[in-house]
Image (cartoon, rainbow, N blue to C red):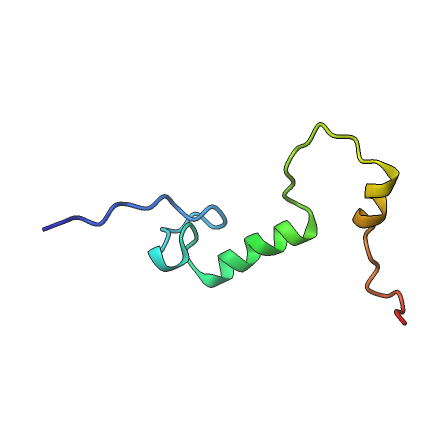
Length: 68
């Protein structure tokens, strides 16, 4: 009989991870993690200095701004 490998705990809540949502325990924790990436809480460090050209692509958009 083959034993299932033990998955590390969920990085969001610490509960046992589920293979279906690996490395998370649930869809909720996966969505929390994704939300943290989208909000900018997680960042990949860089030594590059953004140019003015880059700045126009990284401007944050205010959801209250009217478009069109």
